[in-house]
Image (cartoon, rainbow, N blue to C red; front, side, top):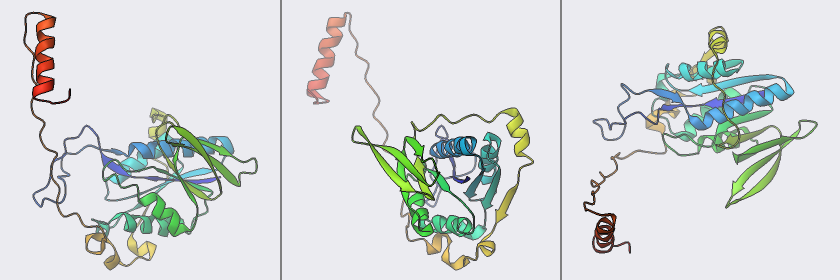
Length: 264
């Protein structure tokens, strides 16, 4: 099978996020960047599909030069080749433009299935995946927690959670599947895998290579505008209940819950 996994690079969840002086973006200097955790499930599922049916796994990512680090991570995990979409004009592009750029690469490729994360943990939009499927004219099934391929590898059954239950959706292939926690446990890149990744092909494509007009991408062409970013309100400091005995502390706590917190 020919398998594609889309990869996004995002700030590490433990990184301190600071708002830039323009009030509409974040300070990117000093940030630790990682593979989007949901995309890791997609990469792992792509590798497992290859191990089961044979074929090759291609990972595709979009963004500045640093995105090659995320692609190399996927190659070290076991992907066969990578494509990096990189062009200064893409800076500030919205989800739809990103999907268009990905589609411009994928439309000329042979593929049986595409895996993506169910959303990016940075913007938390969950839009690129469904837009990509629509642009490619293929079905998509979101929030996969289990996959079953038909014997002829022409269709797939996707198990997805819904309000405490599980619904099974069957789709013909090719299709796009968005992945989430519970589908698998992503593997770590081994030392031999890291060494092999350095020699695996990583192709860079620009807007000119994709036949895309620079005036139709970037912040100026974005249909989604960020007007302002603001940090969450600071939490009030907690209170320590003093007292000589547990009974005294409990009485004081109950009084605070009734008179100040007003939760009982």
